[in-house]
Image (tube, rainbow, N blue to C red):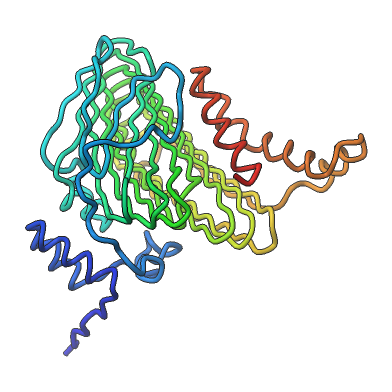
Length: 402
């Protein structure tokens, strides 16, 4: 007879259970009471042990009626904002853009503690319907304002057949030790072309969770760039679903971590039908006593013949105390595919460094040049000039130690 040993709950779990119960999410509260937050024994959280890392949870953030200026300035972008989970009023939308609101969250099918908490606690979501060649860039700024608080937010975006758009989401807020849990559902119609960028600029004491689910129809083309540069603890989850022949995605991400930071990008991708392709590329740069995590899982369904998927993770450690952990996975049930994965991690190349310094370039400048070269293939494909400049400024600020 197997005895059930009750899970020992910590302060963070007890606070979350109280918040879930107060929100009427009794089933989720009971589930968390029984299982607790995931530990390293849960494979998907092996390198990001939430039970150890998430020690406290602040009170639910009070509703915000106004918010400060966006953390990232993209010249000419159409601005939208969600502050403390409340969708803010907006100006006139550009042609091809319909802005709305809906009750509740957006990722109801995901069996994951972070997304379940978001679903249970999110009261309203931003909705976007995009049709045609949408211009300008759409920027969604998600913020946790005021005193330290726990806020959740969600966005549901539909891009019509043969349409195109560039969407950038930024996450920031006050300098308090807040917790933000955000979700995005993005569906691309047939032959739609979308660039989706998320930038975590949360405060140094903050905890940041984001979950992005992508659905690609026939011929859809998606490019993503995930940048984790803020928060003490951050985890971004990516769930691409290739559901139509000819669908392709360049899923890219970047962890930039300094002293005391822990950043995690975890992808769980499904190639569900034949003739789809993907090229996930993740990079991490770590300095000081910090940790960067990249987990990438590619699942190829039995019927998904002719899938072409190549996953790569690359890490660059700028100090002896830095830690970069990579775990690529392939789960293939089809027999006519071209799939592979790779992972590299190391320090700056000494030969390249010597070559530059021997030509009169200061060592610090030479190191910065090599880091820029390491990151170039992530930012260079962003065609919008103003957006490219804004993202480059984020990276340059990190390199300068700001």
